[in-house]
Image 1 (tube, rainbow, N blue to C red):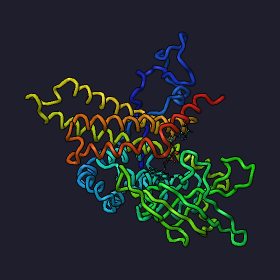
Image 2: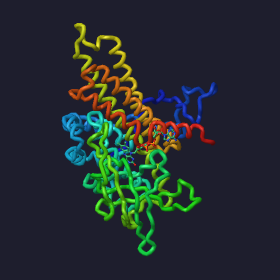
Image 3: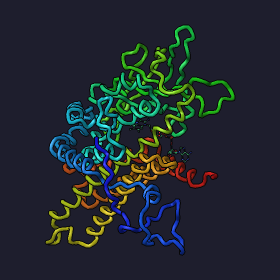
Image 4: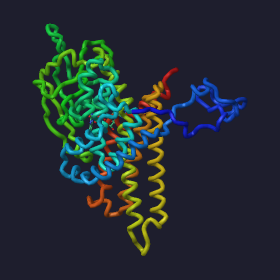
Length: 432
Ligand SMILES: Cc1cc2nc3c(=O)[nH]c(=O)nc-3n(C[C@H](O)[C@H](O)[C@H](O)COP(=O)(O)OP(=O)(O)OC[C@H]3O[C@@H](n4cnc5c(N)ncnc54)[C@H](O)[C@@H]3O)c2cc1C
C-alpha cells in the first residue's frame, strides 16, 4: 500500500517556520515568523494525519461494504450471539484482513491509521465485525514486533488471507489489569527444547474460533525475578494436544465475538513457536498494547458515529408537538454535542496513529489517550442517541440500544479507562 506524504492539513503558509515542541515559539522567534522552510525545519515537522488518497479510498470502500453487506447482518449477529463467519469471509475476500501485514508476506502493508480507518467504518454498523479486524491485528502484533523472518513467513500469509484466525491470550482470572500476576506456566523440556504450557486464560476474544493463540506465560518464577521479567510469548496452535476451550461467556455487547476461557494442560509447544526472547514477554505485551489500543479507539469512534447518524436521521423524521424533534433546541444541542465529541475523539485517534507510526517516544501515552477519550465518547454518545430516540431507543427496533451495549466494552478491554489514566499520568510525571 502506497504511503504518500501529502501536504500537511495544518501546514503553515509557505515560507513560515512551523512551531514544534523541539523549538518552542518565543517572542524572538514567533511561530509564524516568515523564514523560509529549510531541510532542517522540514525534518522537525510534526507528523501529520491527513489521509492519503489511498487511505481515503480505502475508507470509502470499506464504508460502502459495511453499509451494504454488514449492516443488514448486525442485529442478527447480536441476537444470535454467533461468530459471523460470513462477515469474516467478506473481510478476507476484500483484503481487509490483509491490511496490517507487510507486503512481502502477502499483506497490504497498511499503516496503523489505515487499519483504524477500516475498524472504524465497520464498527459504525457492527462493533462485533469491526473487532474481527482489530483482534486479528492485536494478536499478530507480537509476531510483527518480535517474530523472526521465518515465523512471519510461516504464519503471516495465511493470516493475511484470513485462512487462519488468531487470538491474543494475556488475561487470566487473577491477572486482569495486573498482567504481571499471570500464573500460566511454560516449563522448558531440557531434553527436547520444547515448552510445556499449563494454566488457563480468561476473556479471550475469538479464542474459540482462532487457529492460533498468542499466549503469554511465566517462564521464570524464581524468587527475586522482577515481575516484568517473568513472562515469555508463544504461539499455541489449536490442534496441539492439551489445549481446550472451556466455555464461552454470555455478554452485554459485542455478542457475536466469542469471549472464551481457554485451558492449557501440558501443551507441548516447540521452541520455534516462541516469539521474542525468553523473559521479554511482559515488555512485548506492553509494546503490543501501545500499538493495538488505537484499534479499540477506532471501534469506539465507529460506534459513536453510527449512533450519531441514527439519532440525527430519527430527529429529522420524528414529529412531536407538530414539528420534527430536531427543531427543539434541546434535541439539536444534544446532536451537536454528539457530533463535536465524536469528531474530537476521531481527530485524537488519527493523530495518535500518526505519532505511533512515526515512532514517538511517548507512543504509550498517545495510545492510552485516544482509547480513553474514544471509549468515553462512545459511551456518552450512544447513551445520548438512546435519549434522542426516546422509548424507541430502548427497544431493538432501532440499533442504538445495541450500540450503547457495544460501547461499554471499549471502556474495559485492552486496559480499563482507569489503567489508561495511569499510563498517561505516568508518562506525564516520569522523571526525565
Ligand atoms: C468482552 C471481553 C473481551 C476481552 N478480550 C480479551 C482478549 O482478547 N485478550 C485478553 O488478554 N484479554 C481480554 N479481555 C480482558 C480485559 O482486557 C480485562 O477484562 C481488563 O483488562 C480488566 O481486567 P479485569 O476484568 O480482571 O478487571 P480488574 O483488573 O479486576 O479491575 C476491576 C476494576 O478495578 C480497577 N483497577 C484495577 N487496577 C487498578 C489500578 N491499579 N488503579 C485503579 N483502578 C484499578 C479497574 O479499572 C476496574 O474498574 C477481554 C475482556 C472482555 C470483557
